[in-house]
Length: 116
Image: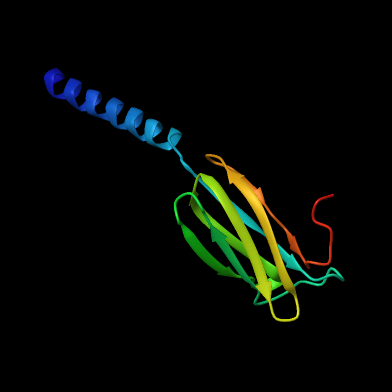
């Protein structure tokens, strides 16, 4: 019976080690935030686009309740985030995403200074 226990123990140890190694190799990030107008009111239904000029990777989200949007599991790299909505104008930001990053990127009306 001891000879059966040892192979199963080895398999169990290898499985745990492999699972841990795979978790450590996260190569994606999350981008989320709120879309607001110049008065600070949330904007529902705004189109938020995420584009990587390096890879051509594109995603589109729409701001929902409380003006919230989210992009999960985004590959690391350079991105342009563009937000547009009727009566809102357009806002564009450049971001660099690194592994396991959770970037909070609030987007305000183009009339608001986003560089301060």
